[in-house]
Image 1 (cartoon, rainbow, N blue to C red):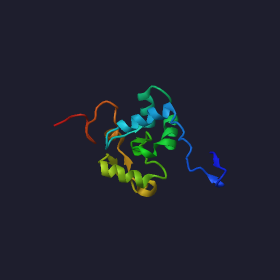
Image 2 (cartoon, rainbow, N blue to C red):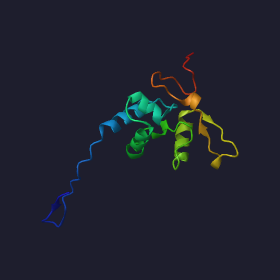
Image 3 (cartoon, helix red, strand yellow):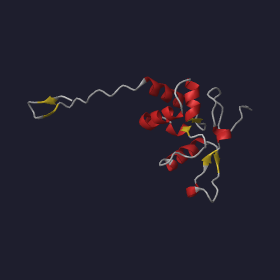
Image 4 (cartoon, rainbow, N blue to C red):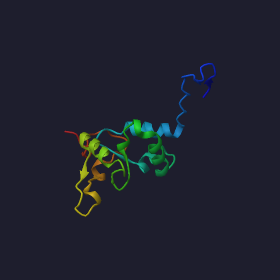
Length: 135
Protein backbone atom coordinates (compact mmCIF):
# COMPACT_ATOMS: atom_id res chain seq x y z
CA UNK A 1 0.00 0.00 0.00
CA UNK A 2 1.34 3.43 -0.80
CA UNK A 3 1.83 6.02 1.88
CA UNK A 4 0.95 9.70 1.75
CA UNK A 5 4.34 11.17 2.60
CA UNK A 6 2.97 14.70 3.11
CA UNK A 7 0.69 13.75 6.01
CA UNK A 8 2.88 10.96 7.34
CA UNK A 9 0.04 8.43 7.08
CA UNK A 10 -1.63 6.13 4.63
CA UNK A 11 -3.65 7.45 1.70
CA UNK A 12 -6.90 5.90 2.91
CA UNK A 13 -7.35 3.98 -0.33
CA UNK A 14 -7.59 0.27 0.49
CA UNK A 15 -5.70 -2.16 -1.70
CA UNK A 16 -7.78 -3.96 -4.29
CA UNK A 17 -9.38 -7.15 -2.98
CA UNK A 18 -7.53 -10.24 -4.12
CA UNK A 19 -9.23 -11.88 -7.06
CA UNK A 20 -11.19 -14.99 -6.20
CA UNK A 21 -9.58 -18.05 -7.80
CA UNK A 22 -11.71 -19.49 -10.63
CA UNK A 23 -12.11 -22.87 -8.89
CA UNK A 24 -13.25 -21.16 -5.68
CA UNK A 25 -15.80 -19.15 -7.61
CA UNK A 26 -17.18 -22.33 -9.19
CA UNK A 27 -17.43 -24.08 -5.81
CA UNK A 28 -19.23 -21.11 -4.25
CA UNK A 29 -21.63 -20.97 -7.21
CA UNK A 30 -22.60 -24.59 -6.54
CA UNK A 31 -23.09 -23.86 -2.82
CA UNK A 32 -25.44 -21.03 -3.80
CA UNK A 33 -27.52 -23.46 -5.89
CA UNK A 34 -28.22 -25.86 -3.01
CA UNK A 35 -31.82 -25.30 -1.91
CA UNK A 36 -32.61 -24.43 1.72
CA UNK A 37 -33.06 -27.59 3.77
CA UNK A 38 -30.75 -29.63 1.54
CA UNK A 39 -27.00 -30.35 1.55
CA UNK A 40 -24.22 -31.61 -0.68
CA UNK A 41 -21.02 -33.23 0.52
CA UNK A 42 -17.62 -31.84 -0.35
CA UNK A 43 -17.22 -34.82 -2.69
CA UNK A 44 -20.64 -34.21 -4.27
CA UNK A 45 -19.63 -30.65 -5.14
CA UNK A 46 -16.34 -31.80 -6.67
CA UNK A 47 -18.15 -34.51 -8.65
CA UNK A 48 -20.80 -32.04 -9.82
CA UNK A 49 -18.04 -29.71 -11.04
CA UNK A 50 -16.07 -32.58 -12.58
CA UNK A 51 -12.95 -31.06 -11.05
CA UNK A 52 -10.97 -31.36 -7.83
CA UNK A 53 -11.89 -33.46 -4.86
CA UNK A 54 -13.42 -33.21 -1.39
CA UNK A 55 -10.30 -31.66 0.14
CA UNK A 56 -10.12 -28.93 -2.48
CA UNK A 57 -13.81 -28.11 -1.98
CA UNK A 58 -13.32 -28.10 1.80
CA UNK A 59 -10.38 -25.74 1.46
CA UNK A 60 -12.40 -23.35 -0.69
CA UNK A 61 -15.27 -23.40 1.81
CA UNK A 62 -12.87 -22.77 4.71
CA UNK A 63 -11.20 -19.82 2.99
CA UNK A 64 -14.04 -18.21 1.04
CA UNK A 65 -17.36 -19.78 2.05
CA UNK A 66 -18.34 -17.62 5.01
CA UNK A 67 -20.39 -15.16 2.95
CA UNK A 68 -22.54 -17.91 1.41
CA UNK A 69 -24.56 -20.86 2.69
CA UNK A 70 -21.51 -22.70 4.07
CA UNK A 71 -23.69 -24.97 6.23
CA UNK A 72 -25.10 -26.63 3.07
CA UNK A 73 -21.71 -28.12 2.05
CA UNK A 74 -20.98 -30.87 4.55
CA UNK A 75 -19.02 -33.96 5.51
CA UNK A 76 -20.24 -37.24 4.03
CA UNK A 77 -20.87 -38.75 7.46
CA UNK A 78 -23.41 -36.04 8.36
CA UNK A 79 -21.38 -34.75 11.33
CA UNK A 80 -21.73 -31.03 11.93
CA UNK A 81 -18.74 -28.85 11.09
CA UNK A 82 -16.39 -28.87 14.10
CA UNK A 83 -16.24 -25.48 15.77
CA UNK A 84 -19.39 -24.31 14.00
CA UNK A 85 -21.89 -26.93 15.20
CA UNK A 86 -24.30 -24.60 16.96
CA UNK A 87 -24.36 -21.99 14.19
CA UNK A 88 -24.93 -24.72 11.60
CA UNK A 89 -27.61 -26.34 13.74
CA UNK A 90 -29.47 -23.02 13.92
CA UNK A 91 -29.45 -22.84 10.10
CA UNK A 92 -30.56 -26.47 9.73
CA UNK A 93 -33.45 -26.01 12.13
CA UNK A 94 -34.50 -22.75 10.47
CA UNK A 95 -34.46 -24.38 7.01
CA UNK A 96 -36.02 -27.68 8.10
CA UNK A 97 -32.98 -29.73 7.11
CA UNK A 98 -33.54 -33.39 8.09
CA UNK A 99 -31.53 -34.33 11.19
CA UNK A 100 -30.91 -37.57 13.05
CA UNK A 101 -31.27 -37.51 16.81
CA UNK A 102 -28.00 -37.86 18.65
CA UNK A 103 -27.50 -40.91 20.82
CA UNK A 104 -26.61 -40.44 24.47
CA UNK A 105 -23.17 -41.86 23.74
CA UNK A 106 -22.40 -39.29 21.03
CA UNK A 107 -19.97 -36.54 21.85
CA UNK A 108 -21.92 -33.49 23.06
CA UNK A 109 -25.26 -35.10 22.11
CA UNK A 110 -25.34 -33.15 18.85
CA UNK A 111 -27.55 -34.45 16.08
CA UNK A 112 -26.18 -35.39 12.67
CA UNK A 113 -27.60 -34.61 9.30
CA UNK A 114 -29.89 -37.29 7.93
CA UNK A 115 -27.88 -37.64 4.74
CA UNK A 116 -30.36 -40.01 3.08
CA UNK A 117 -33.08 -37.36 3.26
CA UNK A 118 -31.06 -34.11 3.23
CA UNK A 119 -28.65 -34.83 0.37
CA UNK A 120 -29.32 -32.89 -2.81
CA UNK A 121 -28.38 -34.42 -6.16
CA UNK A 122 -27.90 -31.11 -7.91
CA UNK A 123 -30.85 -31.51 -10.25
CA UNK A 124 -34.21 -31.18 -8.55
CA UNK A 125 -35.08 -28.38 -6.19
CA UNK A 126 -37.67 -30.13 -4.06
CA UNK A 127 -38.40 -29.41 -0.43
CA UNK A 128 -36.45 -30.82 2.50
CA UNK A 129 -36.97 -34.42 3.41
CA UNK A 130 -38.83 -35.39 0.27
CA UNK A 131 -37.96 -38.12 -2.15
CA UNK A 132 -38.67 -35.99 -5.18
CA UNK A 133 -42.46 -36.51 -5.13
CA UNK A 134 -44.68 -33.48 -5.16
CA UNK A 135 -48.33 -33.42 -4.07
